[in-house]
Image 1 (cartoon, chains in turn cyan, blue):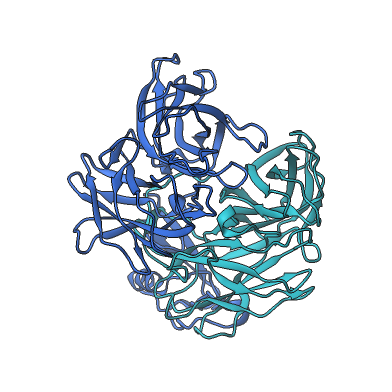
Image 2 (cartoon, chains in turn yellow, cyan):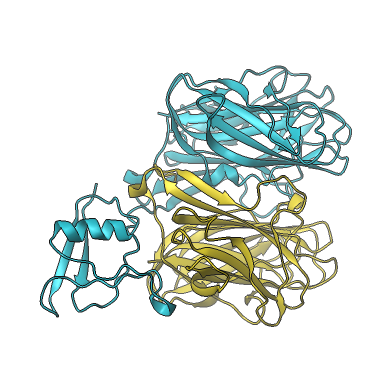
Length: 275
Length: 351
């Protein structure tokens, strides 16, 4: 959790303006490759400079089926549909996201996007089964002198269509810290994507933690992020937890996990914001 | 505010300014020129080419007297101390709290002892779950109480969080965040009041944050006000509209200046059809209020009278400086003909 600072937003935009059981745009991932972009905001929609993006990933699960997912946020600064990953976010790991009614997966990125830019989302998964993505863009900070906003993102831990394998502890014990990779640039804000990539998950809750250090002497950037597997239908959710810690270039990130019962294979990807 | 200095090499190397107006302002003040404000393609996107009216190879230092540029990121904070009553993953997170029956306050249940609160608290995160029963109106109000002496003489510091019919914890608890101070050594408890006349419980998890890495940049309040008259175990009634925004309904008036808000809503009805509702919280003039929280989701599904609050609006959109004597309003838009019984309060933090 980030501390509350003296700053709010006087402007925001979202496609998600109407209450719905299926919020967000429908995204069809590529199977083993990147799918096509779907627009989240046009250049006209992004009428103000954006200081933060909130994502709600939902309806990306199928009972008894592995549903990996990596999402990209692409930008076209000309306001068109020629999205590119420059300045965007790569490989947000959000597997088996539950139906929206069961919370889904939430992320927030304090990333600057210039007004007039159009924003799209695309996916890569182990199939072309669809997922829904809602996004909110925040701008016009009430106290810009008090807001932290980054200019680039860095993704750590991607492997195939998912993340780095993590062996979690059983029965509320922690597993070992597992290195998921090393930063190439300094980052100061973090989001953790954590989930299972197995076709049969028990109904249980995991805790996942993102840490920085040498594997023994660790700073926990995101502590005790819950990830729930609802019922026995392979639906996962995680709340929005924000991590702040300055990790220099060359810093190694670690993840560990804990399950209420017998842990299934898990994976993790971290995304840092810097600049 | 802290001064900030950006070094600009005058050899036209792209620099990482993003706000052209701000760069221009300071370049002009220093007698420098900006020769290319275009946003570049490929790897140079977001960057501005800057060349100064100085010989090539020299360096200009742009001194910014205030941190008013979005280029800057002076604020960042991590809480270095955390205490939670959810110490391990659980399908039933937190403490079980017996709800007071038939609109009477229940007993205080301790969530943290004075020893647990080893540091001054800057932020309280509370999650409430497991509060529904099929075909029953389980409207619910939750108070957070503190005893600064570390005992059990609790006094409510946050009152009447309207949060009925919460989902099971594994499905997603209702989450509320309050940047309100609690002194180290205090004990903290909750109590609940419900409309249901039969014994029932909710689960309450709480996490306290303290020891911020950058305390000067943390905003923490010293009081809370609940805006909205409480009737039985609910807040102020309002009526969402199917397919369009309902009318703004007055919650009440801020008795003191407030700067952080949580929207707390429920449907007090024992038979609720599946429906998805967006609720807005605004302040100011009734015809044209300023939005604080827009499209807060209150989603009822199936026929289990369970209410999902994927309410991460309660994390990002909450800061608005509202003076004392200001009216607060709510309104709603529903995906279908709404069940009767919607009610809400807003809880503000100030000081």
